[in-house]
Image (tube, rainbow, N blue to C red; front, side):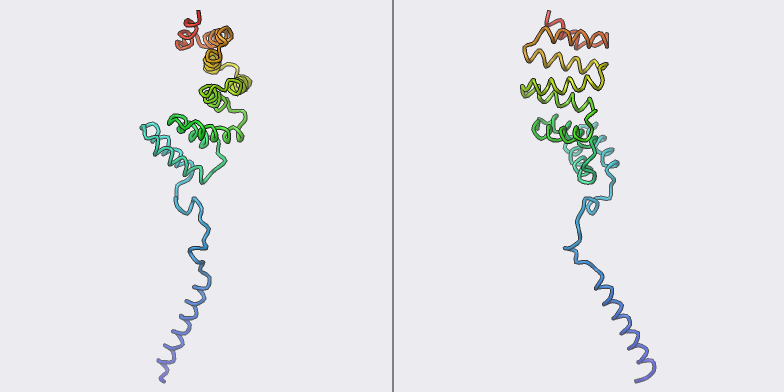
Length: 190
């Protein structure tokens, strides 16, 4: 063998060894842990922004898909959970919506909007005691929100407590004198 052939053989052996070492460090693709980040390069914040845009465009299913992807990346974000619950509620899936509202509320117990949304679902189901609990909690957080008093009045009408409902509508109007819906409901009770 010539010197050139020996050099070529040595170089080939060296590269073959380096390739063998590299292959030994690779993981089997089936063993690689799959996460939400493996499938999507978008951050939860970017996904929420895209979902908001889709929701505003009336594309609720697209918005829900984007929010579910964001939730897979950040499962303890009450904003994402609330938005998923809201879209599910709008599409009529009240039970699934309630699960997401409960999870969101477990992360932020002082969120009056979540309490109001849950009260609305309980009212729809005829579970007035649960609705009342959430409306009271909402008022404890912010007693100056006329919408909460209006919602409370609506729940009381459904629960056949019309005198109490009248007081709630009056309080809503006191806080917001231009609250037309509250005025209409109050007039119905007189």
